[in-house]
Image (cartoon, rainbow, N blue to C red; front, side, top):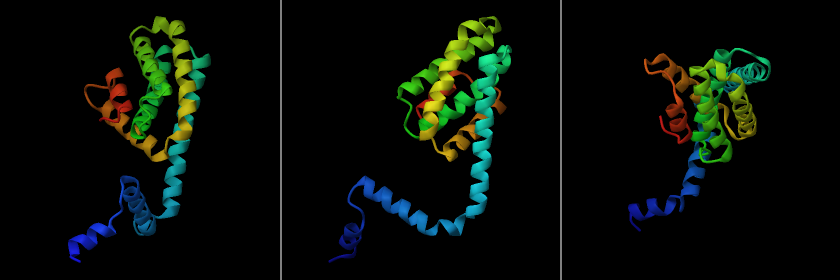
Length: 172
């Protein structure tokens, strides 16, 4: 048997098997690249930041009166979760569609702070959709969303609803 045929027979048969063999190889050598204690500390810090953002957005939305602050905190949370949902392929779920609507409501709120009471329901439903999506999202995907948000906010264009829709599709 030739070496090409041997190599072909040694490779996994389907896409799932290839993915699984790659993941297993990564798990075997993971300790060489990462310190598990450092990874746990970083993961905990990211999860704490997301939880604080969720709490602040919820409090501002339910009892806060500042439209600009609601648009800021809820908008940040919506983008980060949309980015993570797009990363996991959840951009076509009902929760993702609710988040796209919430992004529109937040954009209207940022343009017209007087529309706070009209938009509050949409923002509340978006926060509920975030709560339903969070168990399906990885900490690292949320961190990637937060980094992408920082890059968008640092750019001259800023962030808009089109960026949220691109994030839901998994595009940059």
